[in-house]
Amino acid sequence: MIKTHDPEKFLSPNRRDIGATNYPLKGPYDSRDPEIIRWHIKLARETGVDVFVVDWWGDAGGKEISDVNMKAIMDLNEKEKLGMRFCILFDGLWTEKQPPPLDTTVARIEYAIKKFGKRPSYFRVGDSPAIFTYATQVYPASTWSEIIGRVRRDGYSALFFSDAFSDEYAEVFDGLQTYSPPGLFEPNQDFGKAYKNAAQLAVSRGEPYGFNVIPGYDDTKVRQPGRILPREDGATYEKLWKAVLSSGCQWALITSWNEWHEGTEIEPSIELGDRYLEMTKTFSKIFKTGKTN
Image (cartoon, rainbow, N blue to C red; front, side, top):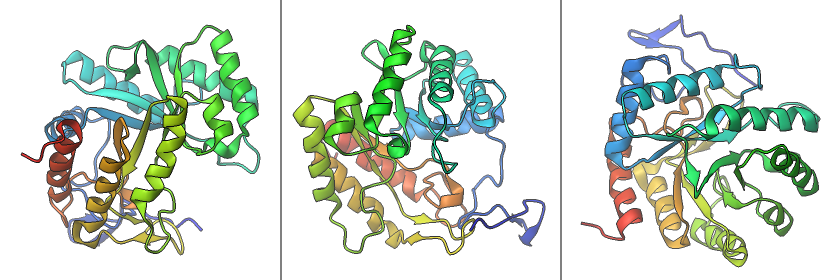
């Protein structure tokens, strides 16, 4: 069940009800605020983050909020030459009992590629823009084959990355990526083993792949009963980074920069300061260089 919250309500002095376990160091903010955009990009670049993968729900109409936000962030980044790149996490397929009609999904993908794919700050693999998908298994692999085939026959070039770990999806998609680690809430999960097993699938097909790290999880302020993966004073984040480092993947994906409602943020908070940025700086350097110093 989804809990309600009211940001106009104060839970304590100087703390609004924003539906989050931790509280942003800057307080509640508008993601289109130029000052916030500059600050986020500056912090991320200093920390070793090269690409913002934006959770995108665009509906091909140009008015959906994540679509509007992504354009605003990319516009400022390019205008002021801030140096960040961007990629879409194609979301919204799982919200109804039945997945969207194929025509709807094809239209949304083509709209996204046309609007963002050729922009200078969009993340590309070779000459093609990358599209990450969330909840890929909403459609069977055969349906994705039809969707991707139609997009390409319509003249839109992109590389598609799946979060489904199976031969049938790997046959259709161009690569593999994760938003949540496999078995995230399983007790004593061996994330290193899970990632190495997943990596075998991508390696066997010669496809690029990226695995994610997560500092913890707590959505109990917005869902009931919700779920918690304790941060364990940084030990959870360290464990996931070590799993990613041992997997051989091309990209380390961080879940998340500022998903405050699910408690996965590494953005500075009142409670945790910039601890997770400092940890990210350390591990991203190791990932990129293989060196600890």
